[in-house]
Image 1 (cartoon, rainbow, N blue to C red):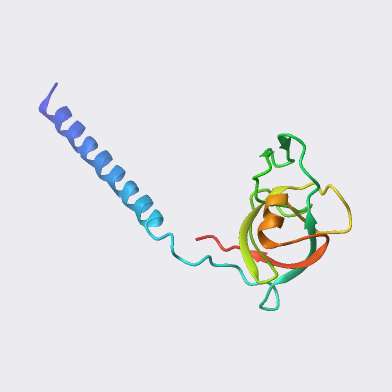
Image 2: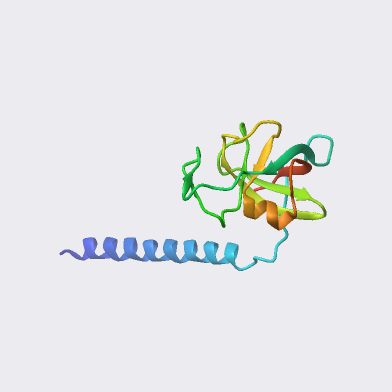
Length: 140
């Protein structure tokens, strides 16, 4: 191997190492501050959207959603017929605000805009069809 080829390989290796270290530093920086408050996108008019929501009926064993997820009794999320799968939302009910995401696009029952998984409904104290407030969670 000529000295010129060896020099190029050494420079290429050093560049790759430097890029790898920079990537690790960026990931560590993002994970280092979990105490940051969750930012949210403000709804039209400066506040929260209002919608009717209810718990989903009890789950069948390992039920698959239209978003391709498998639900269990511990799953946390909401169903909405229009919002895209994976959309991050803040949902507020009874003084509690939770960060959740859209996990399904097919409502089980009519008369509501959102369905909360049974576990999420339990966490916020939602029983029956009630009005909730929601907004999009802003990306970090």
